[in-house]
Image (cartoon, rainbow, N blue to C red; front, side, top):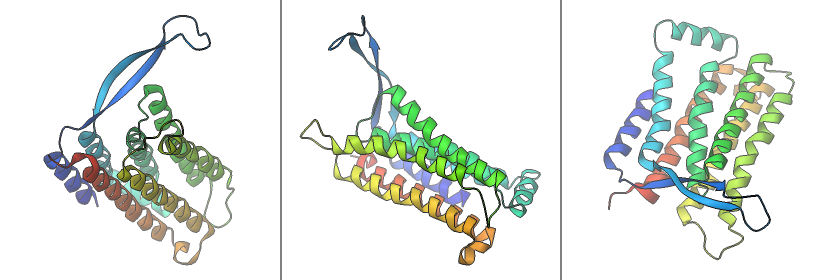
Length: 238
């Protein structure tokens, strides 16, 4: 699987254009009074979308290759035998958070603090999943960490949804942005369903390794869906 991610990242970097999106900031330019006091400082820096897309697939490739290293592989296998995979959660907390920042940029969320918040909230959702797996066992778990993670994980999607709705303007994001939003939202919720089935031990999910294989498949599928939708919408060479 690491090779699939690596190949996709290389292809994107070879074929992509230099399309970038700004990261902006506003700072007070006087007292915080009603109707004034804010000044747009402008663009802090720009994010090259080709490199951003390649980054999260390269991170997945690195994670897959790392667990195959001597010493690390033994740790990985011993955790799987205990119904745990810490490596998965660590990688997801970074790669999926980069994905969320990228999805947020496309409809126009460019404020640096908003993007940091989206990254942090999404990473928190993933780390709640790590806590669930660390402290609970499939069969009869306490779902509190899962529920907190699910609630936190909805926040970025609500924020991005407001920008897609664009209630204060007649304009709207291009169609491919809506496609990305809804398709990746479905994929993200597929991870949730996979975890529910795994901990309720439904059908083949009674075997922890079946759920693990589904995580691997969903990770590849969701990242590939985002890569090529972004590529088709913004990165196709002119």
